[in-house]
Amino acid sequence: MADDPAQPGRRPGPGINTCLVRSDTSRDALTVEGTGCNDLAAILDRSFAEIGRVRGIFRPQLTIREIGAVLTVSTGIATVSGLPGVGSEELVQFPGGVAGIAFDIAEEEVGVVLLGDHSRLKTGDRVFRTGRVMDVAVGVELLGRVINPLGQPLDGNGPVRCRHRLPIERPSPAIMDRAPVTEPLQTGIKVVDALVPIGRGQRELILGDRQTGKTVIAIDTILNQRDSGVLCIYCAIGQRAASVARTIAILRDRGALRYTVVVVAEGNDPPGLAYIAPYAATSIGEHFMETGRDVLIVYDDLTHHARAYRELSLLLRRPPGREAFPGDIFYIHSRLLERATRMLDNLGGGSLTALPIIETEAQNIAAYIPTNLISITDGQIFLSPALFERGVLPAVDVGQSVSRVGGKAQRDVYRNVAGDLKLIYAQFEELEAFARFGARLDEETHRIIDHGRRLRACLKQPEFSPVCVPAQITVLLALTVGLLNHVPLERMAEAEQALHRAAAQIPEEVSRRLSHAGGFADADRVLIIEAARRALADFQPEPRVAASAARQRQEGA
Image (cartoon, rainbow, N blue to C red; front, side):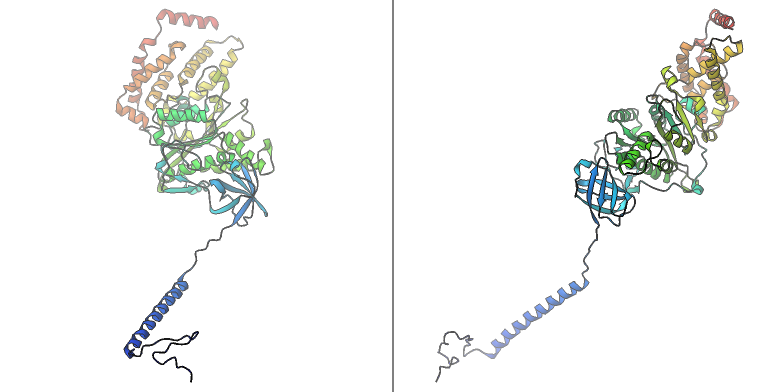
């Protein structure tokens, strides 16, 4: 009989799996052990149920991203494949933080304008879509800052923190949202305010050869906005770093940087940055305009902008046209400058005044880009190198300068005092050119030439020295009534300074009316003339000198 392993006191045979249960094990102990197993099963059941519930409600957040690859890289552009859904002018991202804008979209590849250093990229690098267009930070936080077209600071004053951003490409305001130009923008430059006035919301072109003072006129206009409430934006496009630094120093030293935003695309930056710079600056200005502010924006200069766009177009193998510019060169400037306007009062009443600058070659204003911009803008200020060489600064050629809408915004006091000055000045220049041939001139012609020379001397002005409205009116009124006819030409600058001091003594109420379009009464006119006469008392020649001068004029006739 085999051994019974269940019998007490007997060991189980080897290899037999058994469970030893003591003979005194009670039914209660077995019940407790059974209860523990049930609890474990319940815990496991609850755990698996919770896992199932979580799996049921979990939705993985997967993002589908189109990834392309760089095919070729050259100065300013890259050719990319593998982005079938990319949109026109969509922002794409390269490794190393380099961004680009999709410009040419073909079936198999995309031409991208780079906004960073192309030397950091290589063939095969991955390219990602961003799903958004290029935008820029906007807001009052930018005032006093120097930034690049991407909104990155260049002044070393820490990051730019703005609450709002706007696309750099925005549609221009609708026609029914625009208001007429009725309020002047004082430049502080006598020849401009008197003869070629500019209104708020106008687009006035400044053109001339190299080194004729184009930027000086724009900077003087910015300096003159100190107490006018006008915010300013200076957009430097393709300028040398030294020139930009000098301009920023002038603005800072004269307290103009606090109400100015400086957007800089230097000459050694990628052409893509030069291309987007004016659009980014305009979006910054539009934000202020849409909040009801008056804004002045200077594009210095659009010649470099056109050349940058030509470079990009040729690299992208777009067909060239006249002067190798692409066919849409007119459109890129028109869509930029059409954004400058004055808004209706129920839309805030803000304005954006544009002063684009372009450079001519040998005074050829019939070249492609100058004629395009002349046709787009509301007038032009032409700077003559001949006047510049003769020391007539600012070298504004009054005969070729015009303001098509600014005359409607000019203050009544200017029309009263300087209404005929442009015609008189043009007549003087014609007679002066005729007199160079050595012809005998009558007394009336001598008088016109003599008066014209004094007019030209009065319109001279040192750079970065804007003149307030009361001082301008005092000088122009003294010239109009003949108080300066007997002042020697070599002392005209001294006489003008004396008139400026006299203007500072004009009663504050009269000065306020002159500066804020309060009208020009006959009593005000008499008061200013008397103040000017007293200021010029020391400049009248002695009777013998006056008689000698008159005799010389008669002999010359």
